[in-house]
Amino acid sequence: MWRGDRVEEGAGLRLPELRLPDIKLPEFHMPELKLPDIKLPEFKMPEIRLPQLRLGNLRPRWPIIQGGMAIRISTGRLAGAVAEAGGIGVIAGTGMSEDELGAEIRIARAIAPRGVIGVNVMFAVRRFAELVQRAIDEGIDVVISGAGFSRDMFAWGRAAKVPIVPIVCSAKLARVSQDLGAAGVVVEGKEAGGHLGTDRSMQALVPEVREAVDIPVIAAGGIVEAADVVRAFEMGADGVQMGIRFAASKESNAADSLKQVYLRATDEDILLIQSPVGLPGRAIRNKFTEDLAAGRVEPSKECSACLKKCSRAFCIREALCRAQQGDVETGLIFSGQYVGRVHEILPAKEIIDRLVRQVLELRAAALTKRTPIPSTAPAGGSTSRS
Ligand SMILES: Cc1cc2nc3c(=O)[nH]c(=O)nc-3n(C[C@H](O)[C@H](O)[C@H](O)COP(=O)(O)O)c2cc1C
Image (tube, rainbow, N blue to C red; front, side, top):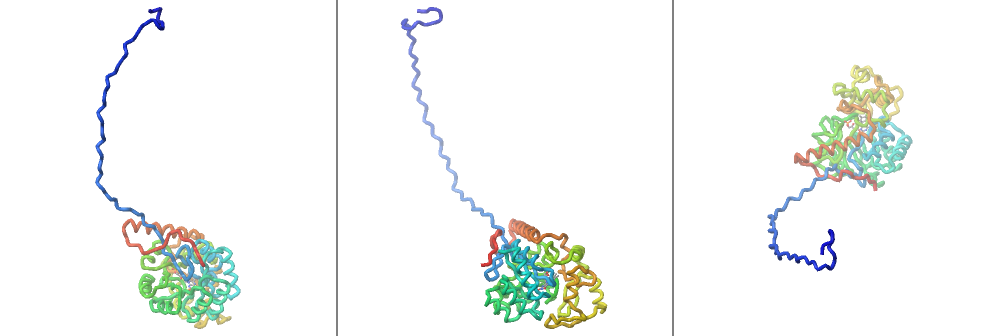
């Protein structure tokens, strides 16, 4: 019964039971999608690398050697900075006493305790054997000989387990060096700074030497920019040696006024002089080179007979020292052919970091154009001198 809007419970009202019809939904199957079995080619991004330079047990992080530069342009400070940045830093022993060389090696070692440090001594120096021996006694990692080499120096290196690397300028000399036990050879072309052993270009020499020997080949002469480094690797070089780029660095021991001359010099300022050593030398034109050409340079009054052979036309040690000290008019300024490409005095680390980055970029660009790249080792290697 209704009372108001409520339904009294139990009043007997029944609502009809609602029965929904049993609806059976049809079974629905998704058709199986069969994709054709396509195998996509595996794409692996090739690793961009630099060659791993191996000299005996030495594995510098980067295949870059800072060339030894006398007199006192590349001392312990520069060699240490280069070694600490992952290259091979080289002290020029020519023009130093054994004690001075020993002290410079210790300076470099203090800067780069785990870096690779070398010494360069010109074979023409009278005290060549004593200087090399002293470097070995000081625990030098590698010895590089400039302008010649002797059979005995390979024996000294073997006995002390120190790699010996002569600078050569022909495939024939490279092969002789290999037979005598060289750990590698620096192949220096006519573009190099300082004394020259050839009138042929580095680009002509490197492929010939690569063909002639199995030991590591290091290209030198005219290598300033990343593109030069890439070209050297493409010719089969395992490493590069760079001189003038590091002479014009923050840690170079050249006087500031000399570094400014390097920055101002252009290709037209470069010439060859006849050195009393008996070799041509590449230098920057100045009052000294003009006086020399005009026969106005006097022989030294105090010759110390520092060279095995010397014409004594003038004292090259004194002339190079004057330039290193900042006398850029009456000093002899040795320089590589392409000093004009050097535009900034940078710390050695920045030179190396920039160079490595740009070389890797150039190699990556070459890869995407499918240009053949020589076989290599990981880009981010680490220095080891076990
Ligand atoms: C100022 C100067 C001094 C050098 N002194 C030496 C040296 O004492 N012994 C040596 O083997 N090479 C010497 N070189 C050659 C460099 O070590 C290096 O092989 C050469 O300069 C490479 O050419 P680049 O300057 O075009 O890079 C000298 C080069 C320069 C610029």
